[in-house]
Image 1 (cartoon, rainbow, N blue to C red):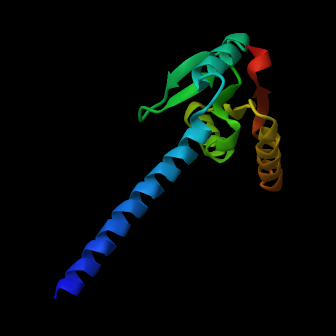
Image 2: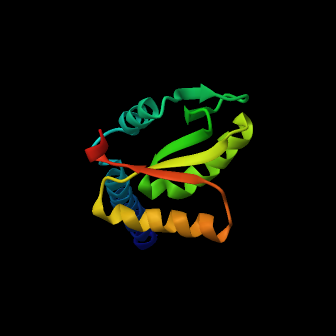
Length: 139
């Protein structure tokens, strides 16, 4: 009886310790993406001002277009979020009757792989999404 209780306690201890390690590793991975030179809003403001757009345009349903120009509904996002940017740009374009656009924020040298993936995806789907890039040097 004592042996089973001890084994159970050890198992519970290992699960708790393992969960703590998992939480620490997960938080580290999240922080790796969170470490940016500037907030997204800084890039959004710079790009939208330069292109004479309206920031945070609210569409029916309450979603907000990062920047609405005369021709484009534009989603501004960090390079590693390129997949989300495609969906949002297409949705906002449909809701505003504008062409879809994406401004991809390029802060790290490795971000070019995401730009390549974005172009590959929209080329293969024959999509009509306009893409711009912005980085710290553009602020």
